[in-house]
Length: 553
Image (cartoon, rainbow, N blue to C red):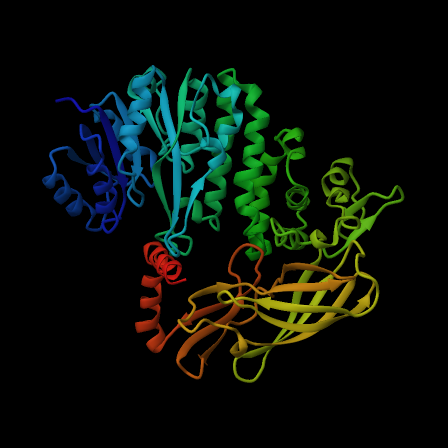
């Protein structure tokens, strides 16, 4: 019997996770499917695993490429050449399909003649198990879209794996994945959006995307290899291919939306890593990125948050030290260290007034309202300038606070560090004293042995917050750490030794680089207490406990 749907599972040197991916396809509620394992010439045990899986289920075929292509495109394209079903889907070996993914997407195709159907993607963090929806606002409502021009924001959902395609649609337009380049999904999906007359969006999850943020270099996904300059080169090259396609296919009206998507999503991914890049890397990055940035629509820049526009402009001007400083504040409400005001009262990032009209427009920070925002949402910048190890599990910190909006009057101010390893907080008060207008400094002794760790232990990381009190109001913000300070580790025997932990103090290894404290239970806490606590924390157990408490009242 001819299958209704072909699901292609691409794999390369992933023998450990391949069975999980294939099993998620085998247990689909719609059973009349074909499963093609397309192996990009793996050199580990993957071929043996694939052959074993094929022997277990007649629906599975194993396809092995004669040589490694180095990407996702070739194994998908080779599988398409042999796929027998009228509808096709793609799955990566490190991900999964929900049990009813095929049934849901196929039902959308059978309701009306469409070119593809797409659904929600659930992202699962391997380190914490936390689940979130990818681009949830784009799949919040079930609907059929008549042409991408009616919803250009969908360009942000550029995954090929969240969709089921009509094979006739792909063949009619000779739509295949570009080979020899990464970020092939972005070009393929843009082409599919533009070429489709109709496509349906459903709200149910149809793909489980496993994220391993701390994977080693060899195991990291392409999107997690942003430190590699060829990664940057491929991303820019794909964008140029997309631009060419939009022009040639008569979809040039989408260019602003596509440019905005690149700035807001693609460039933003690199921007968050800039604090961790040296000048040589940043110079090469600018060589690759800036010529392309010059081609983008000015109106796309204008749609960005001001802080992101500042980072972009500093990279374009090759002011790498300032770019690193600006990038540490992205998404965290962190103020610049310094601002400069011109004769007309316009305020700009940094210590100099920009010299060109474009630079003045991009570095103008008046819309941050540094001097007028409500105090609770005011923007300060708190940086640790010195770290000294104290006795036991304590550290002494010198903290400098920058107040470019001059919200704090000259004079001492009450401040505190707030840290919560569990439900209770450790609050450590100290005083911020003026250095000069807009700059304050303080010294705080943080004793982690005094942290209110629960009796059943705590496993996880917390980032101390800095709280300022002024005229009866409080302001709380992140605390940035020196990225180079050495990791400090100590054993702390909480609760008179009944809850021992290993505690590590370090700078956050990504994003803004906040001060980070990590707790890891050891000894009996790790072996016995934590496993029991986790079982008791399960939803069913908590509900049962609530019922018992209510019955005893």
